[in-house]
Image 1: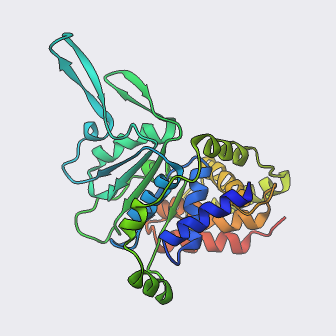
Image 2: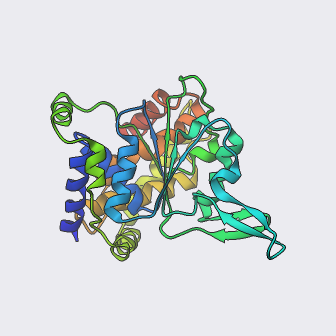
Length: 305
């Protein structure tokens, strides 16, 4: 099992050079059945990562460019009157895919952003009072530009909390960037990518991650982290129980990709900045700096049991 996982990670690393940790985190997010938010400047590989994941797992992939004039119906679909049958027929939108790339999600208005809420939480959408189930798996990768850029709308707290992880790709190292300049075009590499993992294998990995052993001691450590966040100045009311569940799921996925059959505190610490920083930042007023600094303070001050 671990050999197959290593093969996938190594293949992804040939597409997104010099970003081994970020690639592994994105993979863990998929294994944990969550959704991923990538915030960074244009041109660092956000879309490339989404395309590569979809190709390697053979997932049905759709992309929606979020703009200021986007409507919720452009994402979820709508009912159109059919003159032949004389009734309204639902036409599914691009959200009915196994992997949805919501590109530059914070360039759309809050009304359009809200089209993702029910889908990300419950795996379904409701249109005109009728509920439609989404495919399984259903994985959203949303990219957003830094909030300091012109023409962006901040994601509301309810939307941010739907993302299991948030990460930044950043610039590659000089060595990796030189290899990129001398190598094949990323678009050509993705075009030539072949599926490596069947749908059945992916769903099997997700089940194994969910069932991976986590001891009461590690759970108590997670609870200590949550409790500490609720005592810190600048963290508002602190982390919610949903954040604790997210931290547990991601820790299980990180341990699974490490080839272990149980979660250790180091797994929790490895994923904590990407799981809880955006949840702390949304209540303390500065998504980038304050959320990360609060996360580091929590990890540093809470002893490992």
